[in-house]
Image (cartoon, rainbow, N blue to C red):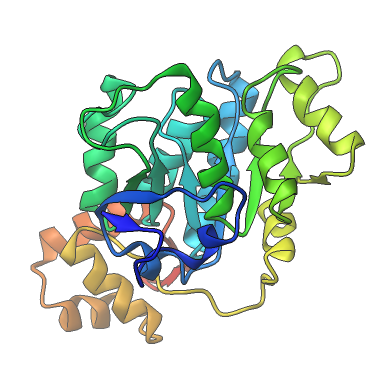
Length: 282
């Protein structure tokens, strides 16, 4: 538990309107996580196929670029953002509307454990045994926007509760980004209206990186994996080793495990083949 006066209380939250009097954190050091560029990704709970695709594509690229992905562990866009960040070897942080012992929705208890296991964190202002009362969800959104550098809304209907996160972000002086959608689709009416009101339109991860002050040519942080064999290969690739035979020898893995590790890293879009048994990080 971190009180508002505690030295480790996140500086980003001290100056928002109505800063939480206390924070309960499970997992990695929250301040260590927040040293990374961060984006809060939120959107519709009843996400469409389009919303799922754009959320997955954008978050995958951002997580691989070393961006901390923040969301609310809710159904729809939130859970897609968390899962994609984890699958991409990235770090993610979930802001909860209840106590740490009352994961909501309960179906996401396993996802919450995975977030912590892979180096992320769970954060809430609510004491243990606090249920997710309706008012908690809007209150939670001010923390989700307060912890990040910018907010990205990938899909939202005209009256989506997600839009409260955008309002909090604007009050906090944060950039609001939105993915445009089909003008006939009610599930994109909210994001299209945000863009008409001045939100930054996002059609690629580069748009987000630009807002965060990063460029595609900038050196990217080394990806992280919870699997030590995968991390060993990642670390070798990050030092410039590309030859498969050299990677095999330096990793000290047996051939079968080495090939399995390469396959999983390629599936996770962390590495890609260059041809001629040479590999590189994405």
